[in-house]
Length: 270
Image (cartoon, rainbow, N blue to C red; front, side):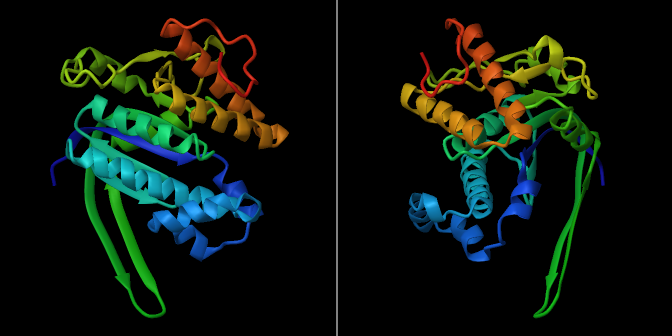
């Protein structure tokens, strides 16, 4: 089977292993993402919410919606397992828009995620499921340099809720096919910026990230509150993720012409 070069997005929930160790496995609630109205009702019951089930079902429900919208615009291959997903597309702007829409959907739900985007070879060889009454045999056979690089960008050591760009992507951003100028009057051009100076010495040589902070005022407020709520609830060992996210969002806003946020740990934006 011939291999093709693809742009691959890898997305992974932050802190999912700790959630799995901290909460009972409630299969019924984990499946609520397949029933949106039931999920919304369950989410109202904040005090009784199982955070593991909330995170798992919210991630998969949001991912399904984002991918359904993307499929109406272009072909893609999505491979989902547990708390992560690989999505292969033809062009950078396609993968980036999926990443941005997913982050926009998850921030208000207080579900932390980090992503990496890379370019290289990709081949999906075989997908198989054989399920009987008392056993199951599942196989997902896919590989390529884009897979390795996207995972490497996400796990580079850079903290926070970010969309990190592997060096293999950077030459494509000057290509009009990979980074076209929007013509519908509603879309935003694909923007990227440098990671902070202290973050640029990382094990994957990631230097840039996607600017995802362009939302209508109400959605922007909801996303910022979601970040602050996660920051407030996080254990001391995890606060670096939310501080790094707030610093990145501040840089994105400055690049868009806003004044710097003087106090990052605030519930409302200036």
